[in-house]
Length: 377
Image (cartoon, rainbow, N blue to C red; front, top):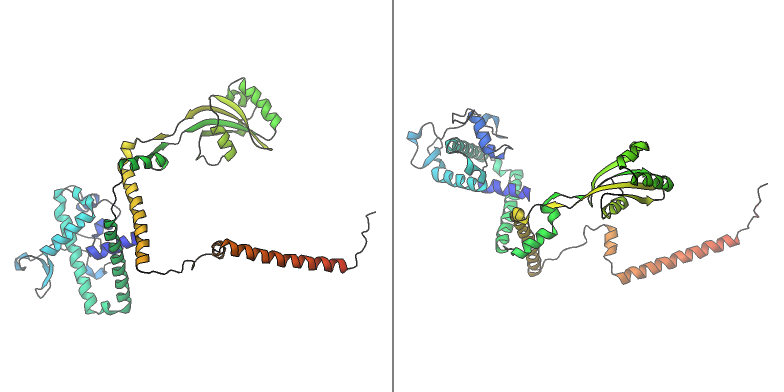
């Protein structure tokens, strides 16, 4: 959807100033251009892919405002309207709506921001006029790209307006239920688990001998005395999401009920661990109240998506849409879609053919002269 959003915004706004397309914050960008916190004259402006001959000096709203007709911010050489105050105000209002962060821009910086917007509008008008004069807008490639952009914008806006008709308001119980079922995704602070270290052995008898020694002393001391430091591993807190640890070992460490505890865990016939568990810690989550807004946004989006899917299927049926459902399905998946009775019959036929081949092979073997096997001396 990001591509479509970008296309539709280009069509709706006609222009988004370069300052807003950059990665930096608008206020920081403006301050950097002004060279501090006080407004000053801007000498240059980044114009992205605009033609180099368009110049780099920022255009002031007008260098000859006395001669401009009322309500005009820019006119063409023949005096005809180029950018009216009404058009500029509409673009600025839409820009503020699309970029809410601009509301935080200090009043002192607004003149510079408006001048930048006017500059961009003027440049785009100039480019459009150049394209028309040189009949660039009549080129097949131009028309094709324009149609693609307009279609994408129209499709996006259509989806947006359909979504408005399917607005949902989740109940408080739905939100709380989502929180409880999805805490790991939306509110997790720490996964907790069982804090443990362990020493690996390849022989069960050796593991048992070390276990007896470790139970009668501090685990670290037993490891040091047995010269097994190179085989010791600190698992930190072991939980369901632990990686790089055998799953059997993870499960059995988590199954330890009381700590501290030292236990022997068999992973397989060649892998034995003597594990020392010292602490059990429950997972920590942000309180529901702190993530309620996030939960509500996710639940709304999810429920609206479900409604949208249902509505689209209804519209498909209403408009009699026919789809070649298996057009891009891999052969194995296509086979999976074949009714079971047909698959079974096909398997029987294949088995019968294979049985016939095997009988033929046996018969051919029996008809051959069998030579006696000579034992080795």
